[in-house]
Amino acid sequence: MKILAFAASSSTKSINKALVTYTGQLFEKKYENVEVEVIDINDYEMPLFSTDKEEELGHPKQAHDFIKKIKNSDGLIISFAEHNGSYTAAYKNLFDWASRIDVKVFQNKPSLFLSTSTGQGGAGSVLKAAENSAPFFGADLKAVLSIPSFRDNFDQESKHLTNTSLKQGLLDALDKLYIK
Image (cartoon, rainbow, N blue to C red; front, side):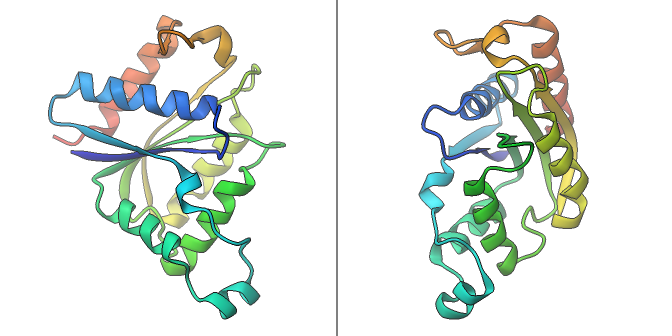
């Protein structure tokens, strides 16, 4: 099973990238036939989307490459960062360009949506938005999980969840994502 994983953040210090990377490693350890590729959305940076830019440029290669990565996977793990209660501008721009190529961006792939933040809300607002829109964009959403107070629940040095209840929730979510 080939899983494509990424943080919906362009920050080089993204806690969502730490979470999605950890989740991918946990998934590979739990099931021996799982291979997780963690990508960085900074590799898909494009001009700010507008219909004028689309008319001028067509669909940039980066948007096609992103859609192809999704197409070549068996499932998705996405960890959503929250900026002012919504998607990050970097992710939204990538998503907007990709959706112009295929509105079903997630291509009916089994998906696990995560989010985290340093606060108690765990980026719940953006996760709820992603969860609610998932069916419209072709995500076969198997599970969602928010990790609140990231720095209190994740050891940055050893790179693992220290909260056993949250870790169990993540393992349960991975069971739902797994395709036998």
